[in-house]
Amino acid sequence: MTIASNVASTAPDRVLGKTVLDVFDYERVKLLPGRFQVQVDHARRLYGGLSNDSILKGFRRQAGLPAPGEDMKGWASSSSAGIFGQLISGMVRLGIATDDAALRAKAVALFEGWRDTMPEDGNAHMRVYDWDKLVCGLVDLYRYLGVEGALPILRKTTEWASRTFDRTRPTADDHDFWGAGPGLTSEWYTLPENLYRAYLATGDAAFRSFGDVWLYDDYWESFAGSAEPQLIHTVHAYSHVNSLSSAAAAYLVTGEDRYLRICRNAYDFIQRTQVYATGGYGPDERLMRADGSLGRSLDSCAYHAEIPCGAWAAFKLCRYLMSFTGEARYGDWVETTLINALAASLPPEPDGKAFYYADYRISGGTKQFYWHEWPCCSGTYIQLMAEYHNLIYFQDGDGVYVNLYVPSELRWPHREDEVRLRQTTRYPEETRSTIEVEAARPSRFALRFRIPGWAKDASVVLNGARLDVPASPGEWAVIEREWTSGDRVELELPMALRAVPIDAQHPHRAAILYGPVVLAQDEACCRRPFRMAKDTQLTKWLVKDGDRLGFRILNGVPERHTRYLLPLYIFPANWPYFVHFDLHAPTLY
Image (cartoon, rainbow, N blue to C red; front, side, top):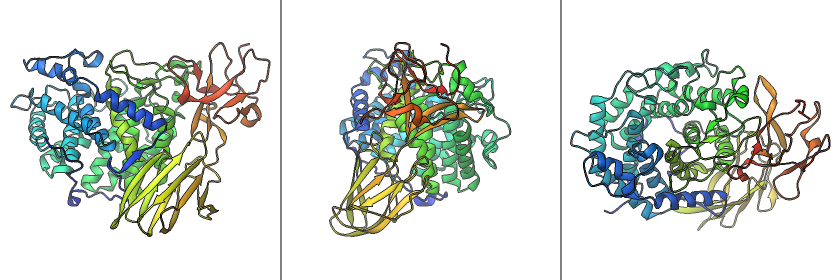
């Protein structure tokens, strides 16, 4: 089979919601050597090396077909249904982003093997939860690779789902935190996004109609008019944030401003009340009431944030909001999560071991794999590796927006030419990122740089001369000019120490950051957690440790060991650390 790339596009007349910025849709962005390229390459090799027979074994066995290969473990011990659609989606997207033809071919081979197991009535033998991910994978095969055979299968299984799925649609609450109800329909409210994507890619109104069935108006209504909902239930965190991507997709297909308001208000609510300094959220996988519960979670549980799945929901919501509004501020959550949650996670292993929960306990945490193999986070992980490429740069008709400071190269088609932008940086270990322009002939366009909300006194240098351009925190710094090959822009983002309280009710229970980086204290061998006297500054107690990104803690009383604050992302598995500190609490001894 010949596999094309990004062959099926969305017809403009199907998109009624207004978009300001566009992504590069997994094309034209290449990661250059650095932390994130290493992470992506590891994922590409690992997922590309998985046995197709093992992934398909449960489906073939259920269909009564020969089922060679070893059984998968954990969540996939009977079938890989829970992550199957994510695997296909991730292989398609990452295969395009990294120009890996073998990975793209693997996605098609898995689809064809699975298709042979599906009966004529379209019964996918999947729960609502699994089937939502299947739709995502099938849409990606059709939209990005031009696999025509995916569309009739998608139509057939959608007809089956429309006939058979339980439509009780219970609103989640403190007890039933993900809307499972009596029919095991957990996370049903995430269905609209991919069904609307199917409609946008094909124009088939049946997909849109079925998506309409699952709109989560009972929950979303809380955010229609306010970022401060009156009633907050401790519902499933990841899937409820993920449901906002369905609200965003509803805005795209209807153009109703109400859905955009829901996304904006919910984003502000999440940032104000739910998010740890790392960008993670959801202790014990729940949203918290805005009454100090987030701060208390550091005492009462060990599982504070579902990292890969939570990041997937956050990345999508931020991408939608940046596309809809053009506002730079939505990129801050992407950056925070990328550096402190995903870069700080453990890479998955071939046997299905996956990093799931982050541990931020006030008494000290460690990084560990989840206790079952092939959990949901093993599926979103490969999708995230592709999404890195989609979030570094945005574009509009006037120019390019630099959202993330990651070593990378962009090939941007501008009018009749191609402009190459090459970004070199050691950020966040260093404060500077450099963009070099390569163009066949002079070309006029705008380059915009996201100034993080924490960044004061940012500066821009063009070809060695400092520019007098506004560079306000949470905004874009804009350079609009005629560019020639060899032009060089240097963005300087000075960093400083800051304490970030976990919530309003615990102003002195805080994480310590340097610029965008969460610093953790090495806790090995009985090192007391960092404390500081009231009415003093962090700089009195923390001294930069040479050229590396790290700080030595000055002692208020004699200590047995030198104590350091270092980036959370450098800590390996099972090494103890402190991420949050009761800054003014008395010590035990």
